[in-house]
Length: 265
Image (cartoon, rainbow, N blue to C red; front, side, top):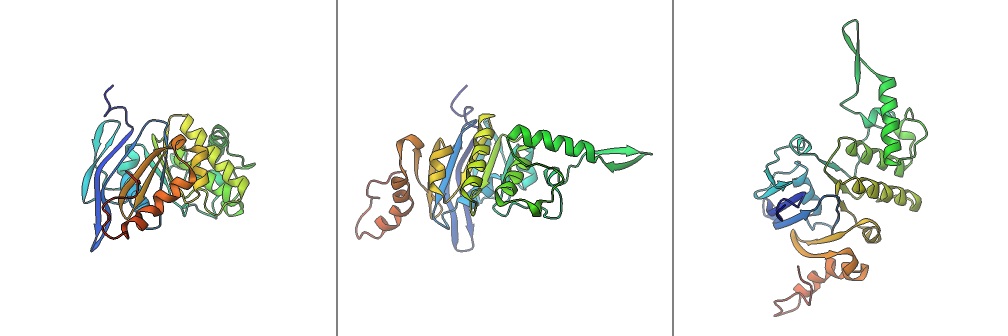
C-alpha cells in the first residue's frame, strides 16, 4: 500500500472565498483509518467551513479531496454520505417531538406491507434501535422516550449514534461536548473512543482543549483560514496548543518579523 492509499481522507489546497472574505486559503488535511483528529482554532479560523467542505455542505473554489485514495467531488451532503462521510452538527438536528428510535431512523424507517400498503414497522424499528444503542454503549432506558425529555448528553449521543448507524468511514463532530455536564462529556468521549476503535476516522472540532488529550491521536490548528500547525497529541500540551491558536496573532503584530516565533506548520 502506497502512502496515498494509506489515508482515509486527503484534502489538498482547499480554498473558499465569500465575497471579500477568504474563509479557507490553501488548506490541507489528512486522516488515517481509525484516527481521531482534533481540529482547533479561534472563532473564524475556518474549522467549520473545512468540515462542511468534507461533508458536502460547502463547495470549495479550488482544491481536491480523496477518500481511500480515490478522487471525489461533493456537490451535496448526499454525495458525501454516498462516500460514507457523516457529520454531526452542533445544533444536532433532532426532532424533539419524535422518540429515540424515530430519530435514529429518521428518513429511513423500516416498513412492512399489509394488504399491499406500506406501514411503519415499529417493533422492528425499536428492536434495531435497542441493538444500535447497546452496540455503541449508549445508555438510554427506553427507545420510546421523546427526545425532548432527554438530557443534553443523551441527545448528543443520539445524534452521534444516528450518524454512526449509517456505517460511516469518516465521522465529523462539531463541538459535541459544548454545554454538557462533566459526566455527560465523558459519555460522549467514550462514544468517540468506541467509534474510532471500530475503524471509523473521526474529526473532532472543539474548544474544550482538555478533551483533545483524552481521545485524539493528533491535532491540527487553523488560524484565519490557513493551517498553522500539526502535532501528535503525545508531543504537545494544552499550553502549547493555546499558544499555537493565539501565537500567530501576536507574532504577526511584531514589526519587521517574518517568522512565527517558533510556531511552525
